[in-house]
Every structure is written in C-alpha cells, then in structure tokens.
Length: 262
Length: 262
Image (spheres, rainbow over the protein chains, first blue to last red):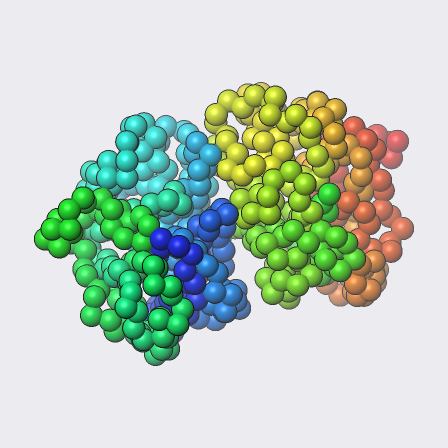
C-alpha cells in the first residue's frame, strides 16, 4: 500500500526531522519504493515535490530533509503502486485549485470499482489511480455543498469517506492550507505536541532531536501518520470510520475537550 | 522583469545543460533574484519545482541541473518581482487542470490595469500577480472556444496576446504537455537543433557540451528564451505580436517551410 505523513501547526514549524525519519519507510524500513511526494502549505503559498525514485535513495528527498522547510501544513506520501502505473502523474500529492484556493490530497488504500463514482467534469483525473478519481469526486462533493466551517466540511468528508471505505481501504489527508482533514478507514494515528517539549527519537532512523531548542513556547502542532513516527507515548490511533480536522496545530472538529478525549 | 526558458523535443531530452547556464541569470549574470520555478512535462506526467532563493544560490536549482531530468517540454522562470510580493504563490510556473490535462504557464512582462480582464470563475488566481490573472483569463478564452488543432489555439493565443500586450509587456509560454505555445510582445528568441549536432557553449556559464554525444540522430528539439542561451548562430528573434506553437521539437503553427522562413 502506501505510507502517509501529515502535519499541522499554529506557526511555521520545521519539517526536516519528521521527513528525515519518515523517508526511511520509502525503501529502507518499508517496501514503498514507487516514488514519493511532499507538499508544503507555507504562509506564502503552497508548493510540492514529486520524484519516482524511492525516498531513501532520492537526492531530492535528502534535500527536503536538509532544507528544513518551515510549513504550516505538510503532506507526505510514499508510494507502493497497486492501482495505476509508476508515473509522475500517479504520484501524490494531487492538487486542484478551486475558488482561488489550492487543495492538496494524499491517500493510502485501494478502492474497488472506483469508476462508478460520477464526476461533474469540474475536476478530472490526469492520471489513472483510484485515489485521484476519489479526490476529484470529493472536491465535487465539497464544492456542491456550502459548508459553513471546518466541522461541517469534516462531517461531509466523513460521510464521503464512509462510502469510499465500503469500496476497500481509504485512509486520506486533505487540506486547503488552513485546515488539515483526515479520514481513517483502517490505519492512522496522530499526536499533538506543545510546551513542555521533550527530546524525541525517530522510530525509523533513530535520530534524536531536542524539540525545546527548536520550538517556541507558544508553538502547538499535530503530526499524523500511518503508524507512529517517534517513541513518544502520546500517539493516538484513529478508529475506522473516523474523520478529524486540525487547525492552528490542534484538533478543531469537536468543540469540547471531553469529546476529543472520549 | 523576469527571464523565460522553454524547450520542446520530439523525444525526451536532458534539460541539465540549458538549466545550468540559464540559472546564472538568477543572481549572477542577471538581477532576477526573487525566486525561480521549473516545470517538466515528461512522458509520464508533469511536475514542477519552486523556490524563493535566487537560482544561482539555491541547492534545489543545483540539484535540477545535476539531475538531468529528461523532458519533452520544459518551462523555466527566473523572477524579478514587480507586481505581487515575493511569495511562493506568486512564483511561476502556474498550473491548472482542465479536461484532465495539466496546463503550465510562465510570463515575463507587466500588465497595467489587468483587473479589467473578467474571469469566469472556472480558474481563479491563488496569488496576486498580473501574470496569474492573465493565465486564468487565457484559459477561460481557450476553453470557451473549441479549437480544432494547435494552429487554431496558437491563433487564439495571438489574438489574446495582442490584447494583453496593449496593457504593457506580455511575453509568455504556455503548454498542455503536447504543444508549447509562445507569444512575444517585446523580446523572445528560439533555436531548433537537429542532426548534425555540434559542440555548443553557454553564454551564461561558459560551459561546453558535445551535443552529438548526448542526442540520437532522430532527436529534434527547440529552445526558447528571453535572450540566446548559447553562441550558436541559429537563434532567431520573435517579432512583437508574434505567436508560435512547437510540437515534436519544431514549429507547428505554420504548414509550409516558406511561411516559417518569411
């Protein structure tokens, strides 16, 4: 299948440490050798990078780890191809502009019979993956509805995700640069970091980092991934059928702390 | 202003040599220090790269020169900001998907009063440049008309280009991955290479390359740029108000060789 990585922060956070660990799953600690992509929503716009080489071998992946690109939202994807050939056009993240906003999307899973999902023609796949077809369909659903806030978008995505999950496996992350939405049909976990920051260790690379020396006291950010990135105890599993939204570094689709903890 | 680079080939051609020379205009031989971007149409899709650092200083620009990405069409842009802040969202190339095809676009110039160009809402700028507004307007014009072939698209772009050129300066390149279109309001030149290939020298870096050792005998490709990239004698200036289309490595908007030479 594939591996997903997401990050949402309340102020620009360096993405180097998380990426340097995660990329090991692309050919070293994992079989996801069919290319990779990373997208960064920054305060000044969105850009992304795609490569067909395994992330562990790619000089571009090394550069992205060294560059420490500060981002508000990050989406990373390591591919193990099943539906769709190993082509740049089939390499996540996929993006579309609507209403002057860039939407970026990554998926892990497999959707049997995805062709039955009717598309309006406003968004059309450029590649041949089930995931890009589902992305275009999701954007159709979101732009047909006028959602008032991120909680409504999240609920709409949960309904759509339930339909897609019935076709197989559908774990995804989606962002418009303000909110990071996620749906879990099988496997996804998340962790929110805030002061006091500790020294943490990557489960993939063994690299340590002293977060206190990197993050200001007001920094809050959440990491999401297919499986935990570090040995920290705060990683929480998402449940099958669950959708969540993260903004300003923390969960924002539920209003009361009790609901988050339940 | 900015510097433009374009390439169209009949089979994948390494873009390293042209890029390594051109990038010197981004901070070494030229004042275009406000970021850069490069897009590659390959046989397996499109991807692009954006950076706010001057091309001559950017490790990403170095990597793109070393990587020798083989492309059918390439679009490169070095920015010297006038309209719009130095943001990733204002960094060319800009892209949009329509009918399942990716369109990529670069511009050099300045359009006074560009806000009068009415947009349908199908394509909306994500940044604040005159060039992205013009790009969305051009895509509106192209998708409203059913052009039968690249010559018709080229003629439509010439009409649109004439209107834009009256607002100031409008030099641009645009591609859907099959055809590279260009419009010149002030400054642009082009050169077609085919067998027998010579050793050529970059005017920007002084680097030499023996093209015969790099290109097969059936390879044909055209380079376009704001000013000539090499000391070869074949560079031809475009005239103000001229639009051209290139496919399979050579000019394709005119059917007879006489017309090309006139």
